[in-house]
Length: 567
Image (cartoon, rainbow, N blue to C red; front, side, top):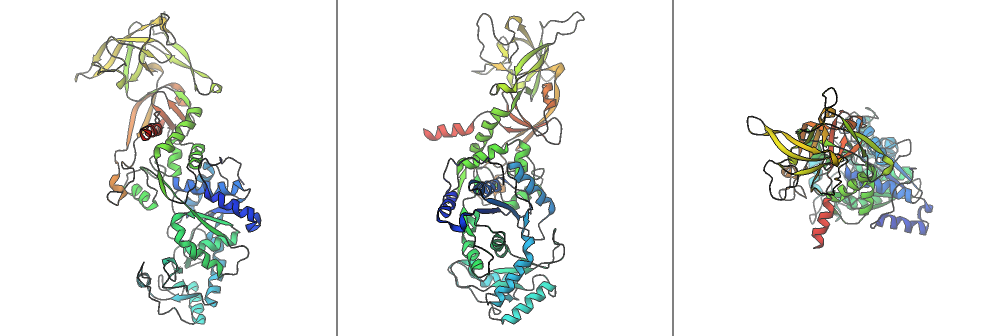
């Protein structure tokens, strides 16, 4: 089991309430076992993170067990690459599945044997109609179903044909095995669902050993039963599948207790989509760079962008586990990210759009070279244990272009001709002159400094209205910085047109290649998140040195939303 780290929910969690009731009633012998069963056909996203915390967290809360089981029943879409990524992402999120990892393909023989059992008992039959005909005959809500002409074929015949299906005698799609339930049932899931299809795809684990593969509905509940799952937790879209889940289990000679399926609300975030099909489309069209693009809602993308796993878990715990779907504000998630990073991220100075500043009265040494001073700066004012660092200061600096205005607008308090400002932790300076290029663009600002204001305070007590960050030009390192906006402009992508990609912001990333940063950032570990003072939190790319991704800004947008809502 995992080390205990899942917080007590701060919102309701009806799943734990139901499990607690089962415990009190002695159901399942007071045993709790869950499972997380993703299909290995893509990378996990933020929605999966909620399922992971519910599945693993529920088991942990009751000293139970949660398996990772790969639902690998579709050989056409599944790959070992995705299996490895799923395990890695779960462990990054903070959970360690028991070994060995389970697979639905581990149970193919048992599933096949149970399918033969249902045929023998008269609860399944082989249908030789094509998929389109079967789908049409199922009818619809308020529309009666039509029974297959093969529905009453003799048990012996169905059994023989099913075995020949497994032996590979028939082409793909020629025949299927269907459960024999009720073609007039109001629940469409019970209208003789398909259990097996002929599909000659090379399976990444079983190779070419099988040419028939079980459907999800047939494999899922039975895999739960084989493993000894007590509580099969899944999202609300499977609510209509629960009667079928129970029907299969009730008609089989199970080795133990029948698992109980419980559905909970999936996670939906504003400005976000989690459809694997749409995410794959974003990659195929070159809108994003891949599954780990920092704009993607995949755990790989969030990790690369610098989201701490702990903050994600705390966010998921805070919103609770509900019975009805709802959409949560992305700003709420970001507030958890920001709160965590505020305590853990070290501070550094970086200039994203540099403008040269020359201190005209800066002293020189005996060789005529500008003097270099060093200032001691706290690594994180929120955490004294993080210590301090020495930051070089010289007569030439970089500041942000937006921190200087030759003709300042109203209420502009940063650097402008004749105005005095504070350089963070260093000195007061006053702008005196500018240098422009042939187009009239300011390329350099000349200032004077007050040597009596060392450390950023004036002995005469005078105040300034602006404190600006800076980087010493001779000591600066070059960096590339990626800035991100919402990948989707609408809160609910696709709500207006039906296609989420209609709300796509194809200019959601801006890459700045000329950033100047203090030298300490060159020692930042791959994946580490730091705060660029006044600018936000930035993650050092795990693969490309001196590439930083903006994780979140400094402004708490969630707090602003709450204030507006309260008015």
